[in-house]
Amino acid sequence: MAADEGNAPEDGQDKKKKEVSPRRKLILIGIVVVVVVLGVLYWFLHRNEVETDDAFTAGRAVAVAPHVSGYVTELLVNDNQFVHQGDVIARIDDRNWRAQRDQAAAAVDIARAQVQNYTLLAEVAKKNFPGHLMVAQGQLQQAQAQEFKAETDYRRQHGVTREATSQQNIDYATAALNAAKAQVLEAQGNLETALPVIPNIASTEARVSGEQATLSQAEAKLREAELNVEWTTIRAPHDGWISQRNIERGTYVTAGQTVVSVVEPEIWVVANYKETQLTHMRPGQKVDIAIDAYPFLKLRGHVDSLQLGTGATFSAFPPENATGNYVKIVQRVPVKILIDEGLRADLPLSLGLSVEPTVHTE
Image (cartoon, rainbow, N blue to C red; front, side, top):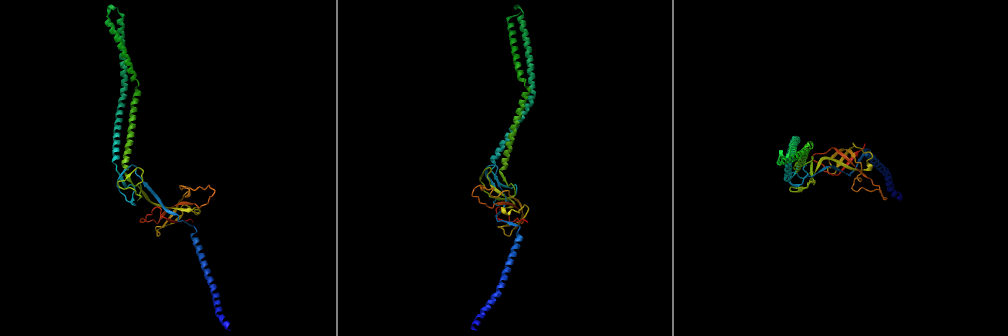
């Protein structure tokens, strides 16, 4: 009896364990079922979402460089200041460039005067050279007439008897004939010189063309000098924020040296998705964008385009896969995502911020 009484509590505990075990199993089964249902539901709701944390904000940062060299006399912007297109960023000492412009302007005036001078000479040449030809022809005829008269006198003096003339007259006639022949030769030379009327006129007109070319060259140098003076004022090429300012008043800058960068307001996202995530990704699909710097800022956008090349393809040292120890690595492809809504004017996004875009590929 005592043994039976001692086993009675143990039997009661066994009965309680048997009663509790099925209940616990039901609870565990219920929890498992709920977890599975929630997992299936989560998968169903997010099955068409593709996300990555390898993404960042991008935009256009244009480097501003002067066209001319010189010392900075004025600096009118500060770091991170917003500027509009055409706003003055800085000014360079322009005294040397103004002097060069004045020299170029003087050269233009001289060349213009030369053109005018040779133009008038060309107009005069059109009258003078034909006139010179006519004069030469007249002088030749006159010389030939004098030669004929001198030759006639010469024959007359040599055709009469010695008693009818004198040696002096004979000598005079001979000298006159020789002088007349010389005048004829001179007149013929003058005529040969005056004959190329058209070439002489063309030569004068060619001088006009040459001076006009000199004038055009001088005018081009003047325009260049005026541009140099204008370029001493450095202006913002477009709207944006001043960044990377590396000049101060008194700094000597050279042509082509970057003095500031201007970051445009337009911002987009570059997301480096794995190649296995691109199966159903297409341009135009909606994207939810989370910014690490502003967790409360929810942005929405769409896929703009997929780069036709992996990131490794355009790297400075692309991998060489034609080796015997090749190991396959999942590549990443940059995807450009445009932001459609959610941006705030009081929270401009910097370039290079970490973001987490989620593309809805349904």
